[in-house]
Amino acid sequence: MSKPIDTVSLLEYLGLPKEIDTFDKFKEEVDKKYITKDNATKDPDVINAVIGKRMNVIQNAITAAADKIGITYDVKEVKDKKVEEVVEILFTKQKDAAGNEIQTLKKQAESSVDDRIKALTQEKEKTKKDYDELLGLHNNLKDEHTRYKDGVALEKKNTFINSRKTKALSGLALSPTMKELEKEGLLSRLNNKYKYDWDETAGDTIVMNEKGERIKSEKKAGEFMSIDELYEKEAASADLLIKNPNAGNKTGIKQEEKKVEPPANNNPERRLSSKVTGEEN
Image (cartoon, rainbow, N blue to C red; front, side, top):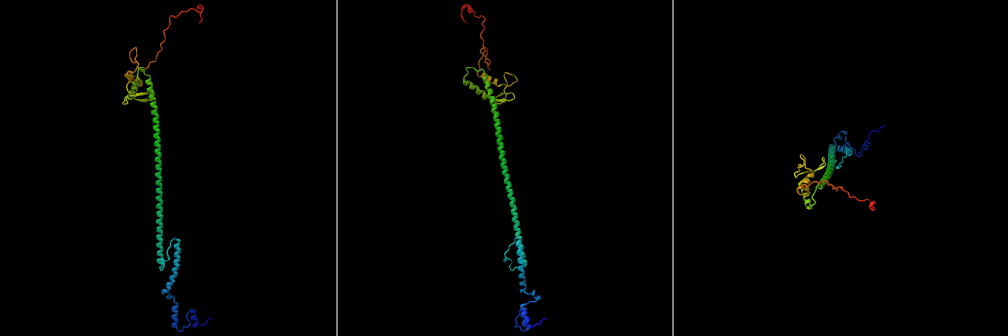
């Protein structure tokens, strides 16, 4: 069974001094220590106390959320700030961080593209340089081969021509009284006054004047002069050929020498038999 309310028990329950003996003192002490629910929303101390605790909760939650998305901030930045101000600060930081990250990624992407383009350009230049070097080497080898082939062909042609000149010279019936100086003069005129080439189709040397024109034969109508005819003509004009003692003319090309047989003995010497003379054969 409940006890009736007494003043001492009430003061003790409320935590008020026991010396209160009037209602005015009781009311003064109660208003000082307690506040009614209706007045709590108007009391600045209560409001600040509640908001302060709530701010701590909000700050902890915001800090945790900020850490998750990589945003760091100094507590001093949000001290004594309103909740909406703290949120605005964090949103600004997040926006700046995101913008910075985008710029970083953009620069990295641009740098990567630039580096790749630079690498490709260098590779292209190196490939072109290698190609140019190979092309130059190919052309050099090609030119060298052409020069070698032309040189071999020219050497072969000159060998044929010189051999034919030697044969034409050796076929002349040169005077035995010809001096070496006269022979050198003949060869000099033949080499300097005329041009020579090799006709592969005919298989013989062709002769031309200083202008490179073929010379008409003086012996055969409608034909060109041969190297034998040319050599004979120049040797004859230099009076270096053997003269024909019978006709008084130069013989020109050597004739095949005929052997002179001794006359036949129609009256052979008669001799006695060894049986008659007693001589031994």
